[in-house]
Length: 135
Image (cartoon, rainbow, N blue to C red; front, side):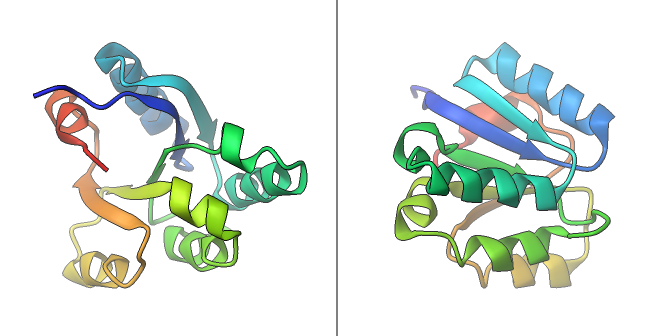
């Protein structure tokens, strides 16, 4: 099995330590050229909207977004609602993986309602889980 290689991935988690650990795991697995990290869903959605405004969406948008659920100001589901308002280019390119410590079945079921959510993983990322990702 060959591991898919991505141009870029994005980590969205208010916990900087989780972001750092997940970034190191992705780097060690060598599955992405670029890794963007955001400590808030609001800044992440603004980043994506700005890429669209600058007509860079098709070149710079992340292939995969790892999204935490429980964050202040804007949670993961609010991010997903905003994400749905982005252009078709963005919605087609970015695949979302919910990366959370939530074991609440309601969160899992709610995430299935969003077409861009391709996977639901529990934190932290492991080398094995990264290598199995094929979205």
